[in-house]
Structures are given as structure tokens and as C-alpha cells.
Image (cartoon, rainbow, N blue to C red; front, side, top):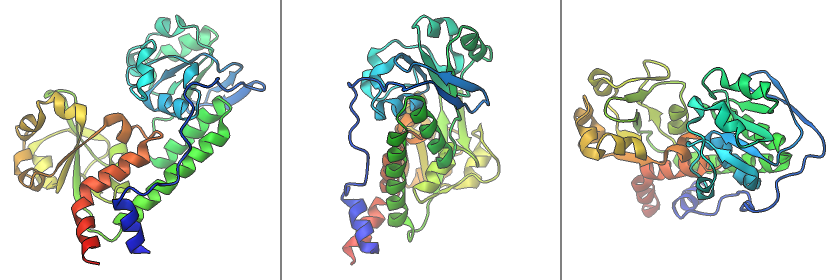
Length: 313
């Protein structure tokens, strides 16, 4: 059984998954008012899901995967997948949104996360009579599943949401089975938005959850959330692998810029050339593509070991 799990993982065996969503079909018609309680504790009644404003990249991806992407009339700039979304009106970043910009699109419902801001925006939207449904910003896989279910309920695609969750679970389980007997590397996750804004991920972060699901361990254990990168923390962590979002690495000048950061050149990861980059939204968004991203990360972390293991059987 172990050999079969490894073989399937290595050759990209087709995992159980949802059928390709129809991105052009009609939005789900609501048979009646949908009443839901968002992550902010506010009860929201949705009468019409034909004009959706999506405020958050993962929200947008979930809506497309559920087959109602055509109902999206606008989205924030963190929404980059699928490519079709870039042809629709853009509304800035969801944490610094403009209620006027959102309302100008005449939405029948706004679906976003509790990070929607500035603070007055949610109340302004609700005062204007627009239903606003807010989900958690997922840091764990269970929170991600809760978000998928909430969005699915909002657009009358509950069955599709459950199928999506089952597919994600199946893929994550296959990744776990393929890596469980291998030595877990210590991974340092660095989040950067320019050389002046570089942080490392501690415990209780989406990055840590992702690292662990890929079969590795977080090299940072001394604090929660994110903190500015320091030479002391990096050297103490002694990571085997450094993991960074692609855009973050670009923002600091690529590998050369990374090596210039405090302490990085002294780590085993840097000395052995173990630097892995990932698609920001795919890996950390906890959306429909998340399990695929975890499998890709696991291959980056363990690929050579898996191949050697198979060759020796």
C-alpha cells in the first residue's frame, strides 16, 4: 500500500476531484431568501445572487469553482484566479476598500472576509441596503471548509461545496500518506512586500498549517503570527528549506536580494540552495486549488527522496 501511495504521488495520479466547473452557465437561482450568519455574527438575508461583488481572492475562486463566476460583477485586486476575473471591474484591496466603488456596481450581494475594511465600510454597505456576508480569514483547513460551505450556501450551491471539500480532503490525505515516513524538513516561511517589509511566519498561521500539511515542520516555534525578520531568529531557526511567495521574492530582488537579508546566508537552506517559491494565492488562500498547491510543495520538499525510495524498491 505504501508503494502504491508513493507511485501515485510521483506520477501525478488523478486524485478524486470535482468536475471542471462551468464558468459560463447561469448563476444559481435562489428558490427563496437565504438567511445566513457570517463570521462577524451578523445575520444576512440574501434575496438575489445574480450580481455578486467578491472581496477576497479565495472568495472569488470558490465562486468560480462552484460555477457562478459569471454572476461576479466586480472583485478586489487580490482576486487573480481564474484569469477571467481580470476582465471585470477591480475594486482595490479588500482591506482598504471603498464603499462608493462597491455600491457603484449595484451588487445584489457582497461576499468577503472579516478583514473587509476600513472599519466603516461594512456598516456603510449594510446601511445602503446591500446584503453583506463575511467569512473567516482561514488559518486552518477546517476554517477553509467552513468558508467554502458558507459561500456555497449563499449561492445555493451547497452540494457543490461539499463535493469540493471532499476532493480537497482526498488530495490532502494522499499527500500525507506519501510523506508520512520521510524525515520532515524544517521550513522557514518568509513573507515580503519589498525589502523594507520582510516577516517570518510563526505558529498559528496559514503558512504553518500549509507547511505541516505538506509533511514538513515550521522552523519558527518561539512566537505566534508574523514578526519582522531578524538575523537572530533566522540563525536560531536553522531551516533546511526557505519557502517564499513568488511575488515576495521578486519584491526583494530575487535570490540575490534574499541572500542579502540578515542571517539568511548562514542558514543550511541557503548554503544548500533549498529555496522554494510558491503562488501566493494558490498556497495561502485556502481555496479550491489549495490541496494541489500542498501536493506541489510536498514534491518540492521531498521529490528526490521519493524518487530514491521508489528506485530502491
